[in-house]
Amino acid sequence: HDRAGVEYWVSMDVQPMLDDSGTVQGFVSVQTDITELKRKHSREMYDWKLAIEGASDGVAMLNAQGQFLFMNHAFRDMFGIPDAEAIKTLTWRDLYPSEAADWFAARAWRQIIVGRALRVELRGKHREGHSIRQELSLNTRSDGGLLVIARDISDRARAESEKSLLRDQL
Image (cartoon, rainbow, N blue to C red; front, side):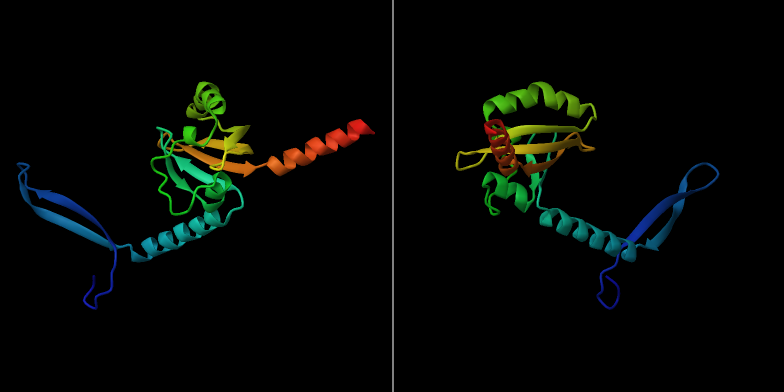
C-alpha cells in the first residue's frame, strides 16, 4: 500500500553486489510498478470468466487425475449438478455410464494425452437418471488435465431420427 493506503503491485529484482573475492557486500534492488498491468490482467480474466459462464455450451476443466476443477453453469445444468455443490470430488466417471467411461479410458484418453484434440459423441448421465446425448470437444491442458466443451445434442438427434423415420415412410 502506498502512503494514501492505495494498494499497488511491484515487480522486484534483487541482485547481490560482490567484491573482487566474490563476497557479498550488499544488494541492489530495482522495483517496477506493475499495478496497471495487474489491473488489466484482472479485467481480462473477469471478461473471460463472463464469457465462459455465459456460454450456452457446457465448459469444464479437469486435472490430470480426471477430477473436475471447474464447471460453468451450462455444464452443471446439463448433468443436474446444483451450483452450490462442490465439484472437486467428482470425476468424469461420475457423469458417464460405465461403458462410455470404459471406452473413454481405453481409447480417447490415450489420444488426448499425447496432445491431440478429440471431438466425439458420448452419452452422459443426468443426476435424475436419464441419458444425455452429447457432442464433446476435448483438449489437453498444459498441466495434463482436460478442457471439455460439451453440447447437449439430444433434441437434435431426436429430430434427425424422426426426420429419417418420416423419410422412410414416404
